[in-house]
Length: 489
Image (tube, rainbow, N blue to C red; front, side, top):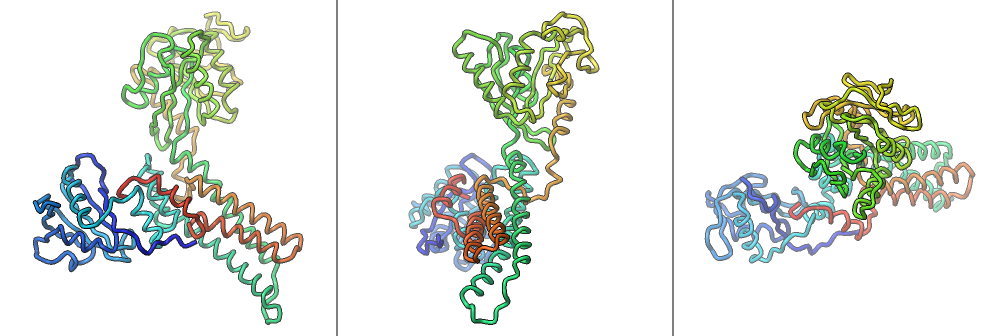
C-alpha cells in the first residue's frame, strides 16, 4: 500500500521541548522550507540561506513576524533526499527561551508553514523511505528509554538490526513464491521443477528465526517497561519506607497509623541493570473501612499481575497471624513461578526472636530454626520458596544485599544481542501471524497438497512480515504508531 502523499505541507515545530534550556531548536521540513527560512534568517556572512552548504552551521540573525530581531543563532540546512525526513529541512539552533522559540514559530507560520503534528517528522521519514517502521518505532523507544541497555537496543534497531533480519526472511520467501508462480504460470517452459525438501528446509529455517525473535519479546517488554514489582505485607511493616529508600526520595507518605496507604503507588527504579516498576500497596488486613477494603483488593490485583513480589515483614516483632495471612495471599494470588523475596525490615530494632509457626501459624514468641540472617532468626515456611534479607529502610542497612539478590534473580540483558530484542507488541503480534502461516505452509508441503494452497500460506506470512517493517501496513496502523511521538520528532 502506498501511503506517500506527494503534496505534503511544510511543517515546523520546537524539537527541544518547552522548558527553559541553554539551547532550543526549531525544525522545519517540506518543499517550502528553504524559502520560508530564507525570509526570516540573515547570515552574518551575507550568503542567502538557499545557497548555504548542506550540514554546515551558519551564524546569523532571526527576524520575527513584525520585522524585529528575535535572536542571534545558528542555522543548518539539509536538502532532500539526504535529510532526516527525506525533504528539504532547516534547523535553527537558538537560545533556549520558550518565548524566543515561540516567536520563531510565529515568524515561520507567517510564511505559510504550519505546526507539525506529533511524530510528523519521523512519519515523513518513513513515508519517504528514509526508514522502515521498526526504525521509526525505535526512535520513540530511544527517546523513552530508561536504562542504558534499553537505549542500546533501541539505537541498534534504529540502525536497522530488526529490519535487516526481516528483509532477509522476506527475500527467502519471495524466492520460493517466484519459483512456485513460474512453474504454475508457465508449465510449458523449461523451468526447474519444485524441490519440495529444499523449500521445506527454507520455510523451517525462516520459522525458526522468527520464533527466536519472538522469544525475545517478553524480555523486551521488561527491558522497556520494567518488571512489575508488588511490595506487599501487613500494615506498618515499612512497605512505603522501603519504596522511598529504593527511590532515594520521599515518594510515599509514611506514618505509624495503620492503613495510611489506601491505594497503589507506582514508580520505577533501576537496580543494577534491572528496571523495577515498584508498586507500593495497601497493607493486607481485615478491615471494615470501605476505602481501605478497596485498597486491599488493589493489592491482591497487583499480586496477580506482578512479575516480582517483595514481601515486607516487621523485624522488630515476632511473626504474626497477619504475616501468615499475607503469605497465604501471596500463594493464592501470585503466580507460582514469579520470583519472591522476603524483606525483614527494621533490622535496627530487631528483638532477637521470632514466632514458632509449626503449630498452625500461631506465634509463640520462642526462637526457632527458621530463615537465618546475620542479625536475626525469622520463620518463613519453606514451601513459600523465597529468598530473604534483613534491611533497615530507615538507615539503609541491608539495601545493598537486597539489590544483589534482585540482580541475581533476573537475567542480565547485556548478554542478549543488542537491537534484536523485540519491544513492540505490534511487531510481536505480526511475528505470531507470520509463524502460524509458515507452519501451515510446511504442513501443506508435507501433505503434498496443490501448490496454490502453499502459496496462500506463504503470501499470508509475507504480509505479516511486511507489517513488521511497514511494507504492507495500513494507514490506521501507521497513525497509531506515530501518536506515541512528541511534537518536533
